[in-house]
Structure formats: structure tokens, C-alpha cells
Length: 265
Image (cartoon, rainbow, N blue to C red; front, top):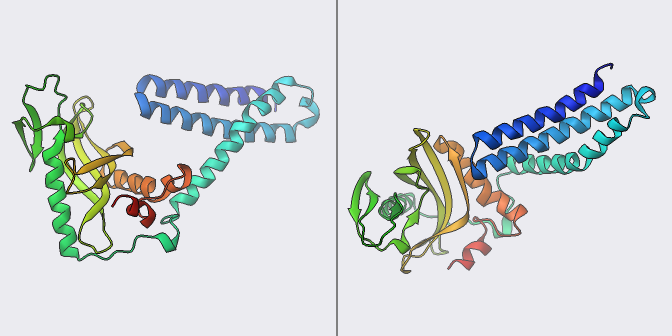
């Protein structure tokens, strides 16, 4: 174990360098997520490697301050990170954490479901902002039926997408209905857009509340997922958030919880 301490410091330095790389190559929320993930993994690896090193060379290194400094430095973050990853793994292998007695179980005819799905997809396309309009007098671009038009519809009730995207398609991923199965009250929405900067397709997912009688029928919810290059990955992450994570970490009800849906009526 002649080079053991160097290896331990190498793990720490490598984690820092990877974090710096994410900081320089990423942007905003994505970069922060990658940095936090890297530091969490680094802390676990460093902690386990330090413990192993101490166990196999205890007599030789018991008085080396640098070893105990690394152990103390990595221990708290490593324990928190391991608990976090264990919890994340549990959520991934679980369909939902919503208690069965509160689980949404409304049955809707498949033809009605598809009709309402198509209707809302067309409505979303008609309301999506493709460009930020600086002056209200200017015409604004909107997407509808996969074509782009200029119009002067009131901006306040449109659905915002990042300016870097050119909206290609709106996809209703999931719908939730009222108790009688007649009205849509909430759901999950995925927008497929072309990223002007990366020159690739990008998928963005959002949760929404819906009330056809409101002046602004769609209310986009707080949590969104973005940066995915395919529909499946975006859908899985979106469902993960709204069917599992929100009810676990945010002290809120999942979207498939009738207590959440009852609040939206």
C-alpha cells in the first residue's frame, strides 16, 4: 500500500475535475444536477476506499492525519448519499408509493380516452409559445397540427417552452378524469422540440391541471423534466416524479392520489 494515500487523494481530485467539467460544459439546472451527482458518488467511493485502506494498513497509518482527514471529510456526505441512492433505488422498483386506498382507479372507455387525448394535444399545440414576444403588438408564432402560424392570441394564457426549442409535437402522456369519468382534471404532457443550439430533438415533460371552464384551461405544475433525447426516457422520468418522488420528498400528494385530484376539482 505504498501509494495508497496518493490513490485516495487521486479519487478526490478526479471527482473535483469531473465536477468542473460538468460546470464548464453544462448549463444551469443540468450542470448542477451532474455536479451534485458526481460529488455524491465521489464521497461514497472515497469513504469506502479510505475505510478499506485503514483496515488493511492500520498500524502503518494510524498516526497519519491526512488519512483521518479524508475519512472525516467523506463520511457525512457518503452516508447521506448512500441513504439517498438506496431510497432512489426503492422508488425505481416500485410502481407507486401512493397508498392503495387513495390510488386513482377511475375507468374510462378507451375511445373516449383517445378522443380527449387528441383534443388536448391539439389545444396544447395551439397554445405553445415558440418565441418570446417583446412587444404585444407583434404577431407571435404558434404551432398547430404540426404547422407554424402567426397570430395575436393573448399571451397570458399560452404554455411556455424554452426559447431554444422549436416545438414539433405535443404529446399527452397520461390523463386523469373526474370521478364520473367525464372530465379531464389533470395529466402529464410531453413536448418534442428541435433544439436550435444542439441541433437535436429534445423532450420536455410537465404535469398539468386542466379545467375546460377556466379562462386559462391549462395550469402547468411546478415540477418538470427536460433534456431528454427520446420520448420513453422523458416519460419514465416524468412518471417517476409525479407518481413516486413528489409524494416521498416534497411532502405532497402524487398525481395518481385521489387526494391530489380532489383538490383540483
